[in-house]
Each structure stands twice: as structure tokens, then as C-alpha cells.
Image (cartoon, rainbow, N blue to C red; front, side, top):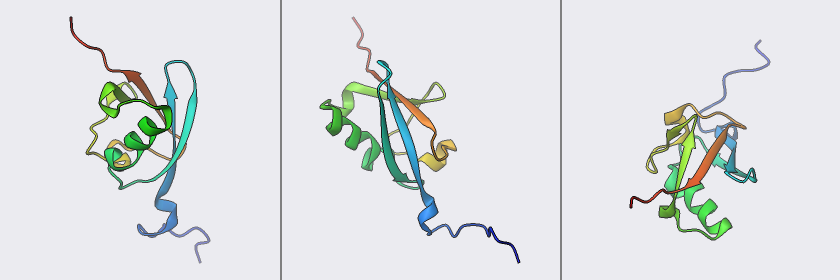
Length: 92
């Protein structure tokens, strides 16, 4: 028997912890399902936590901007991965 069977997709292991890192180096941890859209949890929760407008920042994973309606699974984000967030740059 296999002591480590593949996890059931609906099992609690579908939750991952994502580190959100500010340009200042501050880190924030969030627990999210791999299938939850970023805008439905992570982006909104982080904006509320730090007192910013979610539309005023961009979230990046490995330098790629995250689509708010996508999920961690869409980007291959794993447990303990880091997402960076930066103020949205406005044009002159």
C-alpha cells in the first residue's frame, strides 16, 4: 500500500499558503484554495489588510502580472510561493 496516496482534489490539501511581499520587504501570509480566484480572496484581503485600493496595486508572480480572475492553479503557484505587489504606475 502507498502511504502517501494522491490527495483528493476536494481535500484540505488543496489549500496553500501564499506569501505576499511588498517592495519594502514586508511579508504577509494568506491561506487560499488553489482554485479560488485571486480577486475573490487574496487581492481583496490584502488590500483591506494594508489599507489600499485593490485597483492601485499590481500583483506579480515570477515577474508576470496576475490576472485577478485567475487562480493559483492557473499559474502553477505552490504552497509557500511568493507573490510580489507594487503600486500601479500611472502614466504622465
